Length: 417
Image 1 (tube, rainbow, N blue to C red):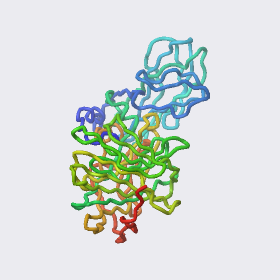
Image 2 (image 1 turned 90 degrees about the vertical axis):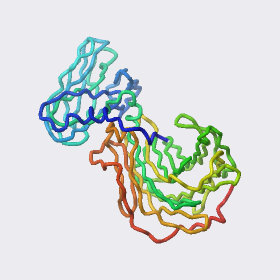
Image 3 (image 1 turned 120 degrees about the vertical axis):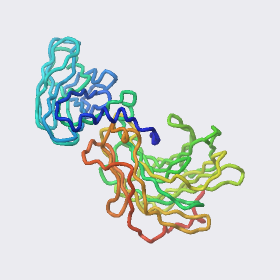
Image 4 (image 1 turned 45 degrees about the vertical axis):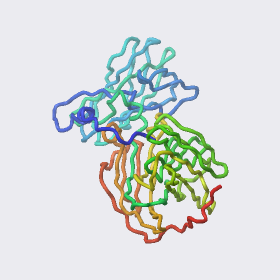
């Protein structure tokens, strides 16, 4: 899971937004390393976005795209920080917010090439780079986009965290559940066309783990349930799993136990998620997960993980939306979260109507501002990626209308295999 609790980097925020409110034109360099992607890969293309920016630029059909955000509408002068290490000349097309310019590069070290001046609207501005002609191997190397404007600018400028800014902002919904909540139930609908590769739609998160659905590749999707190792480092162990479920360990962003079912879930369908947190009476807690697909019409058991040195029922309950592949951080995704319920150890169902909308450090530090969340069609929703302009500020609460209808699930007959 992406980082969710980092301190606000006020220096980065001031630098990103410091141009706002001044009438004097100021120049900024939007580094491709943290703000650009290869959005269309040509046949046999070798182009990459690396620490040097756009390199290995050989294919005329490849399009690389960078984004920056205008705080207000206004005039902007655009330049290209580029060099040409092979050949004598090349011509590249720079398209700014739909307006194309042709720029001629000449052999030599990096310099700023003039692109043009144009009037731009408030919000995110896309800059596309495409090769037109060359007399040697490469079209050139581009490290950044120069922007001179009186408008405030937003773009990723924290070089130490460019990986995270390219992944895009993660957003969350935090729920408060009653004490002694043993089961937590919720539903997710991913709208059609909002399911790009690299997306994780997490439904039932809690202190110690999370459960949801992912898009792994064009042909593979997962139902994923993971539980971290204990805070003291003691290892979480598998206590049971359902048919066809794969289990292993995970690392990278913490360590723990991972279980997943390869399942081709469908955008547009509503899926149900149920988790159970139950202390085992011997100093550990068993966390279990079940998944209901409408096209199957039955609950599927995913797994039970035993987390040592932990005695708890559900706490810290939340949902999140994230992209986990940095090269696909320019793609947008959305999810609708609804019908959240908590069931106590006494068997009482309580409808959860309030959610706190928050974001990770990428959002909080204004490295990316393409995020949103709140209430839509009677359900909570989350949105990120795609460089849309109408963002929703984080750190606010929303209340959905009650359905008054507890989940039709008999917890005593849930499968355990």
